[in-house]
Image (cartoon, rainbow, N blue to C red; front, side):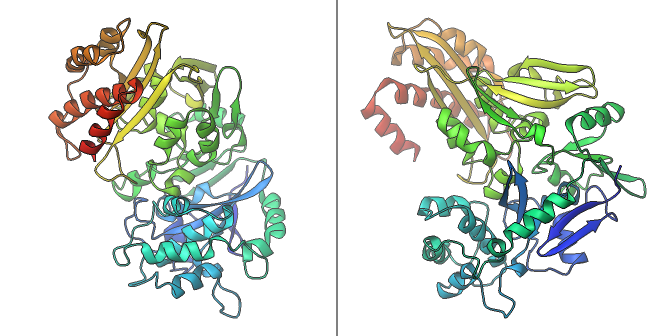
Length: 489
């Protein structure tokens, strides 16, 4: 075993062993390295003031992604390249084109959020050729500003959109070959265990070593993206020990499509899966675009969203409606279950001691199926669901309901199907009369709670209205749909 993680920070190779399992990248940058461009605004991955880029080797190439340093743990950074705002300007002080555009278009006022915006735009500039305004706005979903109103920042982004990265003024282009070689050199086939006092940070080298480690320490916390676990530490001040970091395991980062459907390894992030999901299940991709901001989607994993078991997790309702199958792994082997049966009750999932989420199979919708996912939240972007509804409908040749799966999140202690509602619709004509007669069956399926996101009455009525919305969108009732959309807005 090895006793240190290694990474590249800007242009310096770092070997680090004196840290705890919940030490964050932001604290390391600011307190240990005095790289204070990255700011702490929220400590929960919401505001983007702490944004940095993390480059990682993926499928033989070097991929840079914006991430929230405030909830990114040091133990997850082995074999990566961390890039902060201090690395962008030239050695003679000349600003990077992204920085200069922010100056030229007055994209900074108080300046607190500016480094985070620059790093998000820098990540977009590196990865997208001629991004549209929609692409720019999507890249900035995870960055909040209280001064500019965003328009100057968007204009700055549009100014540099057509300029492709050049080695003449961009360090990541100039040094890419060298960085890749250095990252390959610090990768290791050894499991890393960093000990600080009684705390241990564990980075398994392979899937098989993860299986053995978790069998020996089933109470360890497994961390992939830390977009939720990070808040356990920064907001709840929870001590986690030991922590096993799995985001470096290539075996858990596979995306495949075959006759059965889309198979995603548990370590696949939303960003990694997005194109495949968009090509095959567009409604699910539209939901992905509303999960956190770009930084969260670059870190968060679909497997982690499931494993966490939250009743308001964004993906489970849609995946349940699609009939997803979950594979759990332990030293005893693999176990496959329908995703809907994984969620038993609030805070309790069907996961045995030493067992972890390994992969997920999403069956492809039938060509004749009609699917939709609706997320209701106080803020459209970067907000937690008050309610999430997913529908998967198949009609027969006569227009009757041949098959229907309906799942909700935020309506119960777990994400679950609306069994009584499904039974009331099955075999019936897909008509307004059928929908009106079946709406109240949701009262048999759910008795939601009132909390600060929504009242029980709001959730119940909205769930019924989403059923009506799905009917209007799938029945061709254009006039009614137009009126509904106006009222909904």
